[in-house]
Length: 334
Image (cartoon, rainbow, N blue to C red):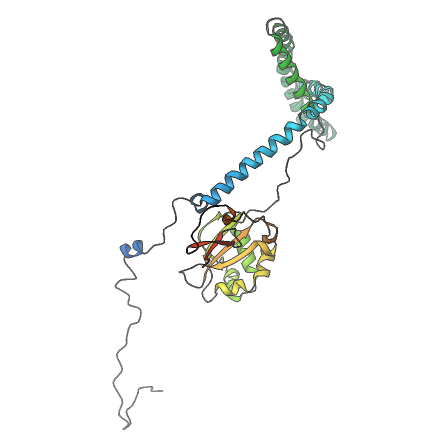
C-alpha cells in the first residue's frame, strides 16, 4: 500500500526531510568545567563537628558516661574483691586441671577414641604418634615451669618489698577469682543497658523501599536492580543514621512519605524513628531518609537556649523548638 502523501489535487507530495532529534555527534552535555563548577560539594568537616551544640552534647555525653561507669564500679569494688576471693579456689582448680589435661593431650582423646571405634588402625596409630610427640615436649615445658615458678616465688618473697608482695598476692587472687567465675554469673556486670539500635545499611533501606508497594521500585528490583540509587554513603547524623539517594523515574518523595508506616515496618523501627524528606534545591525524586536511634516521643528534649539569662535581640531569629532530628528551628519572635 502506498502511503505517500498527496496534495488536495491528487498529486504526490515530496517526502519531508527527516529531522534527527538525537544527534550522534556533538556535545553530549555540559563541559567538564561547567559540571565541576555546578557540582555539589560535600563538606570537609562533618555537620556534627561543625555544630557547636552537637559537638558539645556529644562531649557531655561521653563525660557523663565515663563518670557514671567510674562511680558505679568504685562503689562496688569491695564487693567485687570479696566475690573474686571466694571464687579464687575454683580458679586454682581450673588452672591445675587444665594444665594436667594439656600435659596428657586430653583434647585429642575423643579423636583417638573415634578412630578406635571405627577400627581405623592407620588413623589411630597416626593420632597415637602425634600424642606421644606432644606429651614429650609438653612434659619438658611442665618440668621447667615446676622448677622456675617456685624459684621466682621464693626470690620475690626474699627480695621484694612488702608492698610489692601484697600487690602481687592481691593480683594473683583476683586473677584466680576471675578464672573461677561461672560463665552465667560474672562478678562485674554492665553499668548501663545500651538500647540495641541496628545500624542502617543499604540492604535494609532497599528492603524497606521494596515493601512500600510502589510499582516503579518493585519493577526495578524484580529486574535485578536496586530500585534506589544512593548518592552518598550512609553516615551518622546526630542521634541517628542518614541515607540519601534517587528514587526511580516517576517516583517522588511524597509517594514515600505517604507510606511512612510501611517504611517503618520495612526498616523494623518505631514510627517515630523514621523520617523521610525531600532534599532542598534538588529534583522531587531525591530522597533523604533519617532513621533515629530512639522514638522521637522518648528522646530527651535539650535545654532551651533562651532559658539562659543572657541579653538577646528579639528582632533576630532565635531557637524556638527542635525538629525530629533534634536540630533547633529558629524563628523571629517579633
